[in-house]
Length: 148
Ligand SMILES: [Zn+2]
Image (cartoon, rainbow, N blue to C red; front, side, top):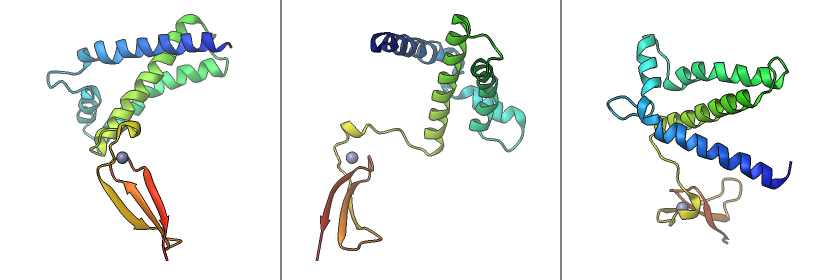
């Protein structure tokens, strides 16, 4: 496939994902405006000790099976199925990313935009003569120096 065609597929898909998750996503957020509402409600409705990620895994399984059927030749690959099933799997993976970020109480940080304001210095465990300076915001190693 030519780069131009590949890029067109990626751009089209990114546009569709934006439309689905950002515009239509509002419909699924519930009154509290929580984008993960469905998974948390699902968690409550089971009445079991289960996480929102596990609820999502159940929803996502249906779409993963559909894609697997396409890969394994159990479903004929059609424009409709490519469009629907690939879109579903990407959306569910993005929702899973949001669940994971929320579960650790953090937001992703853009390493390129980090100003490296919070630095820590430590010695390497296997070589105490190497001092590493690391940014605690983006976890990037800023500097290493050899001492002694
Ligand atoms: Zn940083």
